[in-house]
Image (cartoon, rainbow, N blue to C red):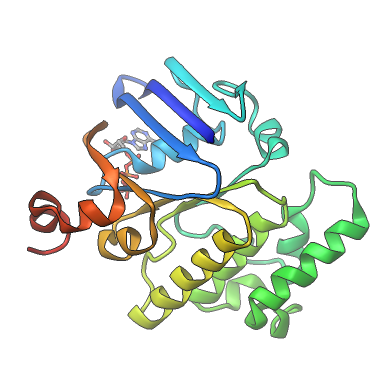
Length: 236
Ligand code: ATP
């Protein structure tokens, strides 16, 4: 079943035409990845879905509802949550406070407490560092915190922007295994990555972006084996 459908969107930054008719479909339960070089438009696509940018034309439909141009907080309430590139945790707040902020649009305090416990069991390192200021965490821990914070809004779909950025290979593996776990417990994932190898290894479906356009799409495993992708994105 289609959960999220982006249909031919055009997005501009002033005069810069960043997305030139992008269409993407995400089915419920899938991991879908957008790969492509720096500046291809991956982050712009996520920011448009989450309502931080408005498409000039085209449609974004989430579970049957047109969300293109809707206010960002209403989009969060519908069940879409984004983990921004570069984590963006609140450095001067504690781990616990950062997580609480992720639930600020909710009022079901008992369920919030349950979800907090779930986040702590998924990320034991965050539990150990509950009262520590987020700015003192390592890069990998900050990524976990940003993911935990996004999960606190209880998303139906999680938008992840380059979760592997700047992390050592072992941590990248750990983060990707957590992404798989989150998906396995029922959250649909739209993953933006420059690490095409890792992204294709966990995704069901993939889209390749080049300068604001989708140039290739299909089954992630098939794409990982295609000559074109190997040359351009997987180092030959
Ligand atoms: P990256 O990994 O660098 O984030 P990306 O594929 O996510 O790459 P975007 O950040 O979506 O690419 O950028 C798409 C295009 O839009 C690029 O040409 C970029 O220079 C431009 N762009 C992005 N943000 C802005 C902005 N705030 N103002 C103007 N142009 C922007």
